[in-house]
Image (cartoon, rainbow, N blue to C red; front, top):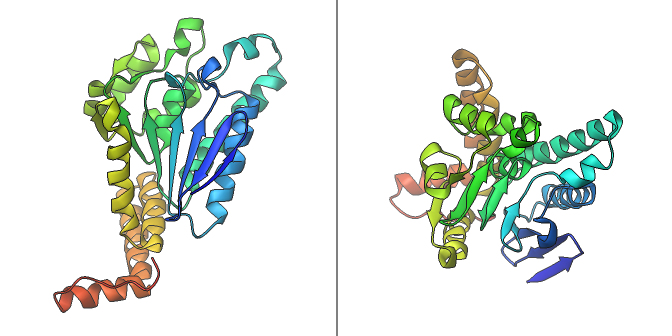
Amino acid sequence: MTTNANELLQITRDPRGVVTLTLNDPARFNALGGEMLSALQQALEDAGRDESVRVVVLAAAGKAFCAGHNLKEMAANPELAYYQKLFAQCSRMMLTIHKLPVPVIARVQGMATAAGCQLVAQCDLAVAADSASFATSGIHYGLFCATPSVPLVRNVPAKRAMEMLLTGDFIDAPTALTQGLVNRVVPGDALDTEVEKLVASILQKPRLAVAMGKALVYQQRELGMDAAYQLAGQAMATNMMDEAAQEGARAFAEKRQPVWKNY
């Protein structure tokens, strides 16, 4: 187990290639200020370049998962150029999660609001404590959560997403589960165990198949049906040429468990 920590982001890696990024600014509810965004960007890019990384878990310290952008910081800089740079920086980080070749799992122990809710929606998977809560609350302060709406409407049915965006009201963890924002909800003391179940299952699968699958799912979602099938068919044909898939097919035919040389 190796750990690299700074003031805002703790980075831990275990021998299996599981990297945990822990937002570590509980006094400001882990707000996504410029420094936090930069730290996340660098850590995600590092994980994406390292082929031994298998899974990234995004966690947080303190009572809140993430309260979104720091409105005090934003109010102190009333300049269009500053706001454009901040939101572009945040969007770049979210897209890095989207494009990362390994699954990113949100471990949500507390409230996730505005860009914090966006962060949960942007992750590939999310496990929440039953005490967690979610809101796109910018509208309460005159700021429609436009960038959070991007992954939100790709996770939650349109009218449910619009209700969250227009009212800014909180939804609880069971509601988030029902609406598709999170995958699993468990008591707080079972949160790590439930995250580990997902991690362990993913680690049993070949890395290349997982990477190709993640990329394909997001690419085909933006296409029409014909183009999606064309892309998916090509992806499966390419995937089948990989040695791990060939071994999997042989194992199925021979009624045995596959033995992969390199996941």
